[in-house]
Image (tube, rainbow, N blue to C red; front, side, top):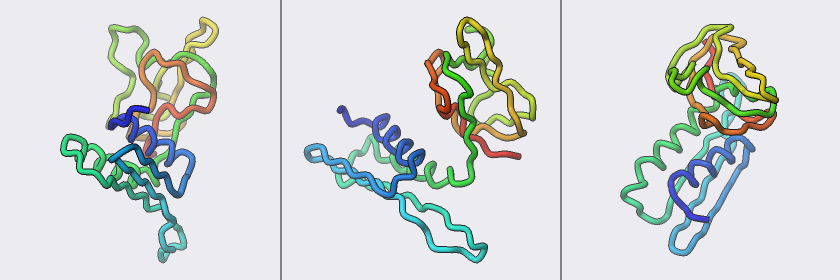
Length: 157
């Protein structure tokens, strides 16, 4: 396995999605340890995971993105996931030359089309059940998706 920022981000996403408490990777002189520990109970009685990411080797050109990923994981505690209702091909727009229905940071209303999933030569529009804002697009245009695969992470309005 080649260890690059995309691999680290994928491992962090898996850790978040699977609610892992620890992930350690040792590859030669590079050691990465990702922890996700349960935080203390707050006054409201709700506990939130407090993920951490550390690298024991200095990687100047990767230091900032890794730190940003650690912050992004911490922010996902209140995000909701929009998952694929079927197996098919994910499309961000109605045609290749058209702009995406939604992009990261964009707000949308209930009933707005978020994407299309092509299944058995049928184009199925996936619409928003609630208003919100796109925080992360988790799938690439033209990528095959599975039932239940996360398409978007959102914050509901």
